Image (cartoon, each protein chain N blue to C red):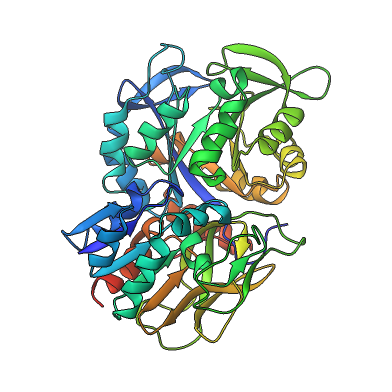
Length: 258
Length: 196
């Protein structure tokens, strides 16, 4: 279990499509929400503990991540910055680090070529490798792993894949519930807790945030080390500071004031 | 001129970016001659303790020691701090610089490892590096091994057990956290170092 003073992290996520921030509802129906560099800076000033930029169409368009967008976004950021989407090789990862990313998130490429996790971890350290997993409940009371932004079933099961990813050198797991993503109905705490107990590396819960109570749930019942929020912040539903104050009032350690 | 020592232990773009906020003269280098010439040294680094073997192999350790003998300041960050100690349980076959006594150890089994995220530091006494920063401030950590609390420890962090979050003696400074990733509080540490 995490210690008393280690803060649970609130991570702002920017889903980027062709250089603009968008947010999908259940991975579809994209809405435009602005310039990633501006939003990233605003989130960090508002108290986000970390920032993730995901180029959500890089994999499906079969193109490399937009390095200039990464570089521009990193310029004014002095909190941990993770970049994902379209990273398929050590070279792609190196370009992201060179542009100012601190960690890379790999999903489809890691499923296709699991040794990529080890390769990047070996060169840049495990702390720089986040393995992102899109999980969907199946009828057999377990979770299937999907690739290509939730478009492709992989035949892998979530718990065995997270253990393998950790074994291969992953430093963190970014776990998205496809069933909850964009619904605002709360994180999948059952899924998050199962993964958090299966590995000793931090687990970032994602998908379903709609209110403060959902964050409290996922940190308590879900045993998450961090929680990710995208649309909840972009459209001014709540500030990070408000969210953190509420979490602190129910006894969850957070970095506040930031 | 500030030289950031590159020994292939992680990416240094973020470190350089933070120092460039406070100085125009900042280079990333793996050249011992340049390390000897620098006014100030920054020794970052993440990952496995064995990565510090490169420092010895490339005679950067000698250059760093020459720098210190001149009385010039050095800041070790993360693995860079750990290397200032005698060594680490992570790789006993590699020795540290031994400026601070003791060996870095893993975390107790009661907590998850690595220690990743924002944690508070408690200041133990006067410090030049962390001056102007309130006690119990949060900094960003990411590491699997921890340095022991010694006389030179100026700040501790609690995670399973107490460990050295910052050390300082004369011209030698070290932080386990990442000042370049710790928001405004972290940048203050960078600024303090640049202003020494």
